[in-house]
Image (cartoon, rainbow, N blue to C red; front, side):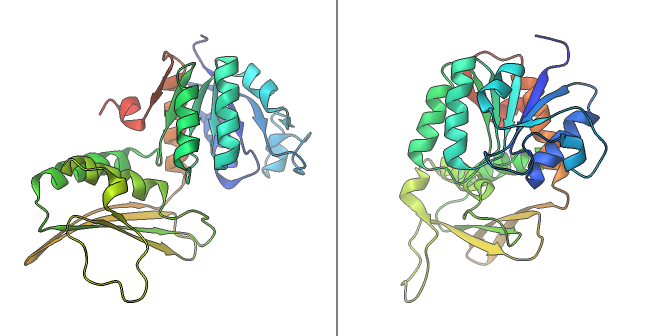
Length: 269
């Protein structure tokens, strides 16, 4: 392993892809060696720096994902669930570490990623920020202390282009609350209220998804009890914090043995 791990970015034309590339290029702890985008993208064969609106940096965007993996020590993937599953399989085949920020995956897709984690280091997180991961820990601790007389609601706010709901971060927080209460989130999740739904079921963990404007990301965990409410909140104002967290995870993953890890592992929490 080189002192500066070689990092490649998938989904290079996306907002996060471009920000990830800029973050790696600005880092003195890692180096950007390759970038890929979807087949048919206008970015294929073009210089990444020029296509991002800057100066040429010599990184030519490719649609040969396996070749990109073979050039890198670590690959960062903020793409789509079906693509991420295929990328995880390539990571397992090439032995390349993988950092996954993709959200909205189903149980089968998560199982496929866990399988790939038996062959290489994979860091997967619904949110890469330090603050959100601290909020996750706080949520678990508060849920463990408060009884079921406190209803739990996870309220998330995102921009109007986000395609999945609840957000990956909201699900992380819901899982933390469920863990704190010693239950499975699948058994208590309530995210489909519409019409005459009847009274709230005791012990359920509710989700509310707000979509509008250019909101980067806000998450509230509400504990509503008799006569009082507790609200834990995280507000992201700059998506660069997610890129910084992902690059930190990539540097960490470059030295790890095979396994599936979270940002809590990266941060030592």
